[in-house]
Amino acid sequence: MTITKQGEYYSDFFAIHNGRKIKEKTSGTVTITGRVLAIKRNNTQKYVVRGWLELPDITIMEVCGPWYDDDVIPPEIFTNPDQGANLDKKWVRKN
Image 1: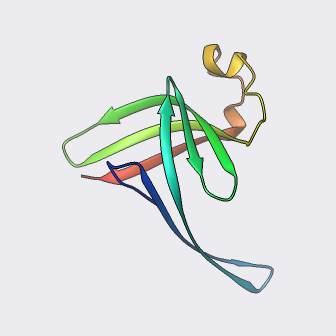
Image 2 (image 1 turned 45 degrees about the vertical axis):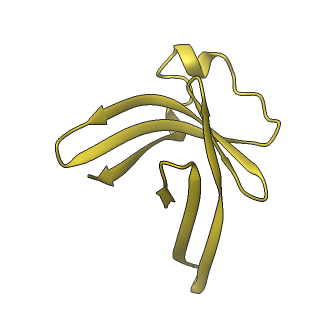
């Protein structure tokens, strides 16, 4: 997954599931409003930014989600770190 500083999104996904190859290339745009990061492709995926750490060699962003299109993000996700913990992910970028 690549997110550019111009707000462009590119994904080159590959996986094996039940012996079948899954290969998918997509692109779209990224916006951040408050603590919500939205990736728009053929649908919209929304993630709540829970934390951000910049180190000399890497940047780590912790997000919770996704929620899709018009799904309402529960308010507790913003205030209670234990709420939705099963949806937490860490995205890492080498600087």
